[in-house]
Amino acid sequence: MKRLIISILGIATISLGLHVHAFDLSLDNLNVDKLMSIAKKTQDLKPVDDKGEFEIGSGVAANLLGAAPLVQDEKLQAYVNRLGWWLAIHTERPDIPWHFGVLDSDSVNAFAAPGGYVFVTRGLLLRMRNEAELAGVLSHEISHVLKRHHLQAIQKSAQTGLLADIASIAVSDSQHAELAQKAIGAGTELYSRGLDKDDEFEADRMGVVIAARAGYDPYGLPSVLQTLEAMNAQDSSLALMFKTHPAPQKRLELLDAAMGSSLDKYTSQPVVADRFVKVVGDYAKK
Image (cartoon, rainbow, N blue to C red; front, side, top):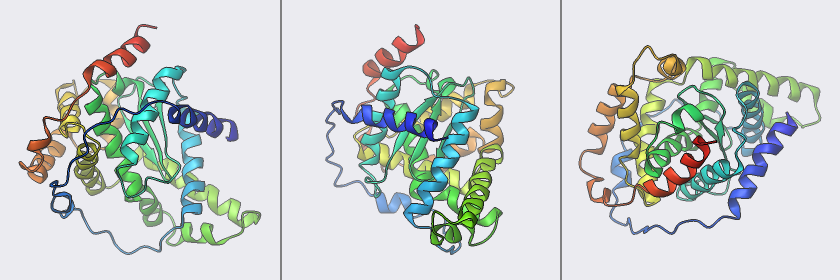
């Protein structure tokens, strides 16, 4: 497990040494509060501190990497990390240890784990056309981390207070290790059944705002949803996505209702197709 986590930490470190494209961030008139005001209100749950969140997230991430390892392409991984960090610094949690990666899987999907772990599969990445689309997907997953959707789901479906107990027990305590493994196991199981639909809709709404804040055309995520909607529903690569997420058409309808025309003035922001095609195209040719 430690080796897997170290590998993804290394990717994040590589990304920090790369130049980040300086987009225009003059979004002072973006009505973020209005767009996010329809986000659901979750029931009160005992909060988990950062230490507990990071421990559970690293364990869940290691399990995901055990099922589908990272693509062995340093340039591609550094590119996705650079973009992910650029998006993350435009959120309310810019200073947590964010890690991004491309999983070596034909499945069309993306995942997040508590504490800042975000993954997109090779199968989904190769169906994208530009950086704004990738930014939209990463922003959706970033939103799950920001809202602690997975932690809340673990608390609801496993044992109430489980995560808080983990955070309050000394690391050396054997009971802590047992509780941590239960939480990690419960968190890993979420990826086979999915989060609450309202969590997915909330992440969609937040995702388009984060992408716009970072200087991208906010319609990147809707564009990806349109691609998914146009695919053959019987395609095996979509099986897990369709099992764990609401139908793309429903997501598009609700996102359209939430966005209205409030983000239209930001459609002039770039989609950055050339850089995306260069990096992803070079990888695809290998």
